[in-house]
Length: 282
Image (cartoon, rainbow, N blue to C red):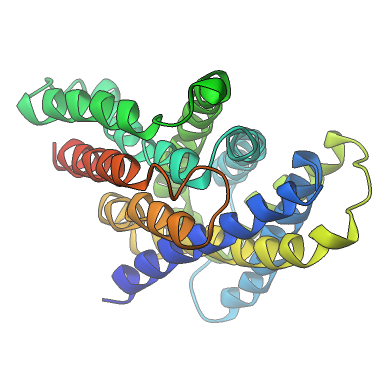
């Protein structure tokens, strides 16, 4: 299926893109600069979707406009949290933590639909705690930064879960050609609120441009898949494979402590992925 291949591709591109952005920060690019570049890249990749209005039904309306604007705001705040989490910890820690978004989507569904908590969700909660514990393995002197990364990543996961819920509810009714460009235009319009960022050092420019381009492509791809097919649950399960890819890619090419602690982090990512699957199956 197209959406399955698209979600798996986005998961792999996520790992590659954030590895490049992490490298750019190691070479002097600030987290604010990384956020600004990747936000504008997402908006640029999304604008051509306007032309889909000539081929697919599009029904602009005020509820969808408000939902798209709200999703853009959540995406803006979530992007800040994501980059901060990336700055605080290795990719092999921060990226799997962001995968908890899928668990939160399941929890939001339970809260809204008043579905009883069953054994699958309880097991998922236990596996999540175990996975998070393994993901935080590393040198003791860096423990404070890893704990900070957990907080930023969980904040991003909550915000991105809201983005998915809004997209699921409104993108298919208003049309992707209207909803998605609107959402990412709001993201771009809010980006100047971050203020000015220091110039990018020459050594970091290549990684920053490459990473922003990749991340700017994969994020709208996931939103587009949810908007077109409405299979948010399945798409999130497939996209959660980034938890595994992030550890593998970071251990192969990354910096920091990824190579030294990759067995424990890979085990943590596997537990977290299992928890995600159990939660969404609930």
